[in-house]
Amino acid sequence: MSDKLIKFLSHVDMVKIAVIDSTELVEKARKLHGLNPTPTAALGRLLTMAALMGAGLKNEEDKLTLQILGDGPVGSILAVSGFGAKVKGYLSEPLAEAESTHEGKLNVGAIVGKGDLRVIKDIGLKDPYIGVVPLQTGEIAEDFAYYFAYSEQIPSAVALGVLVNQDGSVKKAGGYLLQIMPDTPEQIIKLIEDRLASSKSITQMLEDNMSLEEIATYISDDLNTRAVEELVPEYKCDCSRERMEKALISLGKTELENLLQDEKTELQCHFCNKKYVFTRSEIEKIMENAKA
Image (cartoon, rainbow, N blue to C red; front, side):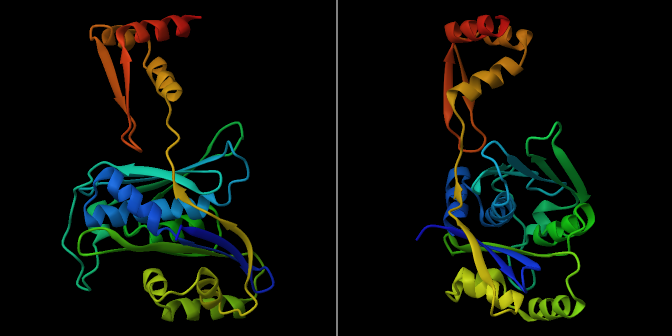
């Protein structure tokens, strides 16, 4: 069964909800990067958030970048979403670990530490939008709820979860983003707050085989919740030899000349670990094209 993301409206279109099952894409990221369980949860949560937010991109050229820059052992974490909730990402230290919490859960906050959350939206405007907020807990979901309230002034509920098997593989991963529109009556807000306060975790709901429609209806506490769009999110790297050539050009003349000392130069994509090899003559040709 492939991953799925569905966008919903509830309470007479005053509440927007996006719910995702991201199990397969998080497992693909775990395998690609050789992640330990807690880094799997950290990157998995950020990739899931990138898909939820990226589902709102309007054009194929639009791009959303999420960065967590903490001082914990995992280092920086990056996730990028393109049009259609196609995501990719990586983190600095794939083998970082921390003791589990008292409840036996993976301690993402401990490996993330303190620092900043950055949201960069490149949506065709003259300059990209950049929002920066301090990390609140390092658990990622609470940090994004704070970001939406502080930077975008949108009251939001965010849930992100990654459940791993004994062998470290991903058992369930998913999340939801619930946002309340302006002028929503207080009684509706209170109804949703009460429901969220008593609800199970997103991974528990997925493990209980609740459908995305059932999850959206449950967390909104509105039987008239309706689906408005369905997407198939996936982990997809868009690297190419052409892009790597542009990366080489961006190094500048001096750095390229230094590369000519070697018979060949190898570049590796951070997102999918694919390797690209350029011979000395190819580097020379790239330098000539850069001058033209």
